[in-house]
Amino acid sequence: MNAQDSLARLAAVIESRKPQNGGDPQASYVSRLLHKGPDAFLKKIGEEATEVVMAAKDADHGGDAQKIVCEVADLWFHSMIALAHYGLTPADVIAELDRRVGTSGIEEKALRKVATRELDEGGQA
Image 1 (cartoon, rainbow, N blue to C red):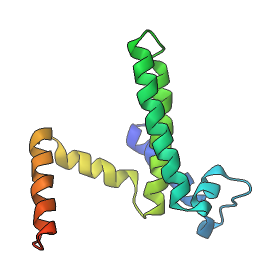
Image 2 (image 1 turned 180 degrees about the vertical axis):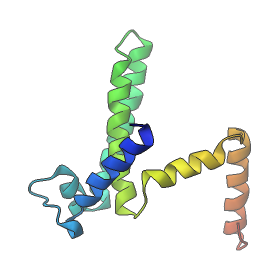
Image 3 (image 1 turned 180 degrees about the horizontal axis):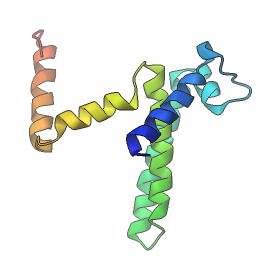
């Protein structure tokens, strides 16, 4: 099974845990986070991002680099809950990454700044 299949399978489980799809907040962690609303899962994303940074810093000083993998898995998981809440999927993220392949990160950032500036000035991106 490839990574995209694994992400799609996990996304389907998350989707099934949405309260509107019968997910029970008393029996499901995902359903509980979704039931509580964005503040709950967004807080978890922030916590997990910090834990990724801490694990990487620890690895820089002789700690177990495998902990980075575990923390990134937690970050991705909670990010997937946010995607589901907003009607998005891992495939949407993969499509965006595919779109960026071959584009310099510096160029991509500059293009986003121009687009944001145009929107702020009332133009269209």
